[in-house]
Amino acid sequence: MKCGEVTLGQGQVEAVISRMGGYDNWLRYAGGVGQVVFPPDPPFLLGTIAAQPACTTSKQIFESMGVNWMGDNFETLFVGLEVSATKHTTLAVSKLEQCSVGGPILTELGNRAEITIFQFLVFLSQNKESSESFICYSRGKDGNLWAVDAVWSTGGGWDLGASFATGPFEWSVGSQFVSRK
Image (cartoon, rainbow, N blue to C red):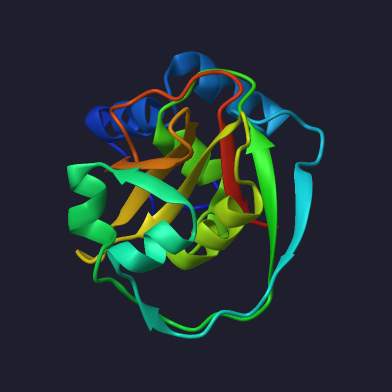
């Protein structure tokens, strides 16, 4: 064993398998496929999001970026959030090839998973009136990582919601995750 200092009991092993989305995903990953939920093709690259200054989010900022509606949880976590300045960032969109809860998605995206809510807003403002829906992982006011989902509404604007990053919600095949390249 390469990690001799690691000892796992049955409950810990079951927890790891559960977080990877179940036994089939674990077998696929352990069997050398490596990718659990995204296809092996490289993600669609979006290009660079310009450097963003530090800001504190507000309803007005969200509205100016094309947001039409915010769920209560999203509003609590992201309105009034102090966002640090960011450098130029290349974003990518990855589509799920199978249903998955957040744990395996976060594992596969690794350190690319998290983007700021403001970077996501810039991305959304560049994709107004898209028929697609998008998901990102952003840190809320509580310091936790959240799955933020955006859908363009028929009323003209993005509808935003926030849910636990690791589940229990299962994302469907074709769900598109925005992350750093």
